[in-house]
Image (cartoon, rainbow, N blue to C red; front, side):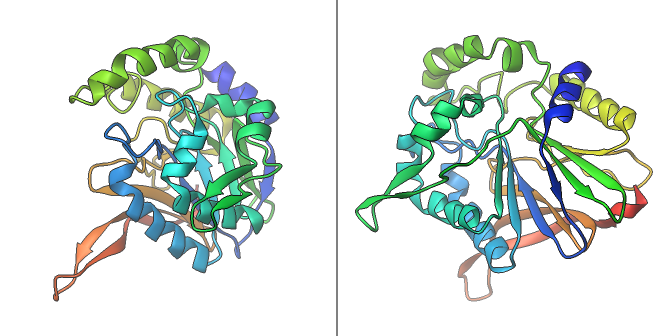
Length: 292
């Protein structure tokens, strides 16, 4: 795993940021076709509410992989059709140079430039009754590096599946199993072992390797993949995880603002008059990046 992570680190594009930058990191949306197997469907209103919040405040949105469920589903067009409002909002971020996308194991086909050119340049917008630009010319990478020259601090962003036999090396076989075997079972309650349903022991192993690479490399590492949010305070380590957008009844994200890092949760809350609204809660932080 360390070798694969080093490969990704060495070829990752570098994005500069400073104290005025506002960045939000989310992953593992697993956007589907809007059917009973679409794990994103129950939290799509949370996602829209969160993105509206970040859009109004000028945040950069970085998606750390598995944004779209392309193991269970063959065509991304059916996904953009089911979640056109979400894609319209993400496209707004992209037009303003505030959107970056990393691919994970479940959307690893985005590593192919031909797929991006053919499938991600435009989408059908029902409100306009026509095709409109989506992410024309986007480059989807396996990793990104956030660099703050003033703090002399780098943050390595990666999905976290690298080095896994099923999720990385043999991903076509894993996709076959999910698409043709586990997907039908998921509709009646089973969970695929290569997704959120992987065992805690497996997640522990993945996170241990990610944390060890971060310590060895000396840079903060932020990943997704395990669906388990992790926030390391100064002195505790350099590994972070933004969790996922498919937790039951909530989604989590990592924010970087004023050179500080925080873990936040988005969920549905209730006002005294019994109306519902999307609420943001800080779970951990904010901690100064200079203290790591």
